[in-house]
Image (tube, rainbow, N blue to C red):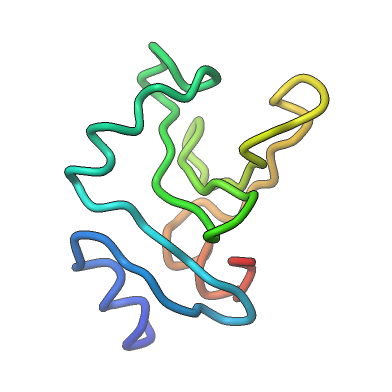
Length: 97
C-alpha cells in the first residue's frame, strides 16, 4: 500500500491530489450531514464518501467503490462507474478526477 493510500485510509477527511485527479473525502461529521442526496436516501448499502471538488461524487454501492455525477440526465444506475472492490483499488488506479 502506498504512503498516500495509508494516509487516506487512516484520516478523518482528506483533501489533496491523488493520481491524475483530486480527491476530497468527507470527515465523519460531514458524512453525517451528507444523507440528503436523493439517490442514496434510505439505502443501507449505498452512501457517498466525498467528491473530486467538482461535478463528481465518490461513494460505495453494493460492495464497490463508485463515482457518480452529482447531476445526471437519466437513471442514476446508468451514471455509475465502478472504481474497484476495495478502497485501495479505487484510489491506486489514479482514477480520481
